[in-house]
Length: 179
Image (cartoon, rainbow, N blue to C red; front, top):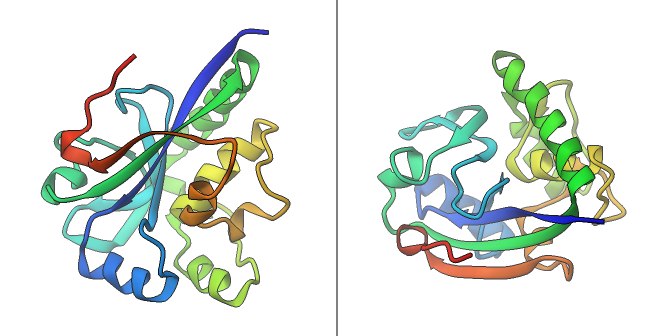
């Protein structure tokens, strides 16, 4: 069976919002994104729709060159590779297409973050936070990395999973993909 790779990127922009989250989580990264290419050209998450407003958020295609990340040049990141089958990749792409087609219907699950602190999932239809979204894409493709609901998955859960292989850690602006 042919294999493919997806990439999960965790970031810390250093903004007031992310520093506030870090004070609680004590984790080095607090945002998760998924990419279908090592160059991060197809990078998706639930996050800011405008770089200056963390509360105006939802499903986004992220751009590491000219998007929100470019406004925070000291953004730290870790990028992981996850080997999957070609069939898994096709499933994930189909799930992603649903998100793309229905982009306006999605909102950011801010209350879901509170649910994580209470260890009680808070789920709403068409509402996700970043790591919940990435876990949901994986789960809908049949890839279950944890025995918990996507609404309880944190960026740190990705960081600590043995199936993910680190390919880069450092400043996002200095990332140079190598094949």
